[in-house]
Amino acid sequence: MSRRILIAGNWKMNSAPEGACTESSVYHSTEHVDVAVFPTFLDLEECIAAGILTGGQFGHPEAHGAHTGDISMAMLKDNGCSMVLCGHSERRDHHKETNAHVAQQAKAALEVGLHPIVCIGETEAEREHNEQEDVIRRQMADLPLNADITIAYEPVWAIGTGNTATPEQAQEIHALIRSLLPEERTESTRILYGGSMKPSNAQELLLQPDIDGGLIGGASLEPEAFGEIIAIAEQLSQDN
Ligand code: 13P
Image (cartoon, rainbow, N blue to C red; front, side, top):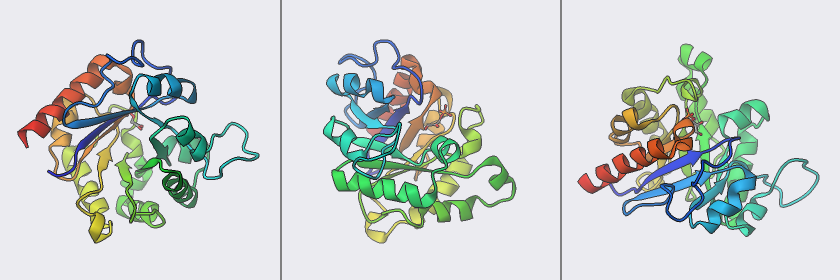
């Protein structure tokens, strides 16, 4: 496979795990696997200083202004971030981020030289009504798919629930996502899976042809578990 696996840890509103922001922690890229973390804004600097690929969990599309509690893409970039999450389902839900706003975020990130990881995925109710494909199409419609971005498929019903999508369910949506990319980006765009990924299911998910890595919440806060997932990804990459 030509795409390098990316294993990303989304720490959400949790402090950095003890010892994580150091040069010897497991949160560093390996020979064949890119590893990144998304800490709270307070821990960004320490992760960056430790040489870890680091991103913001959110960035406002405007450069500055009256947006209490927010931080801009430009500020993230100026402070050493290389990536940013756009449209995580918790932001879409709790902060009412729309598909249009998420697309603006991704475009603003690209403009300042940040790599956007755009999160998409259906809710439990949408899957029950078999609407997942329509949801994915709508969520991708305005995205700058011609640019170098990463997509993370995170079915909302799998996040933090322990209910991982089966490899078949995930692969089906990942293949759909890839089919919606412009031809020149089909092979190069990474598509991550997120939703209760852990050492016990990482291998079967990462073996799917259109799954290029993981966006990991809970297990990324446990250095040992996160390290195991990285080791699985490294082994799979070496076997390829
Ligand atoms: P969990 O791995 O805890 O299910 O979280 C996934 C996620 O939301 C990553 O962005």
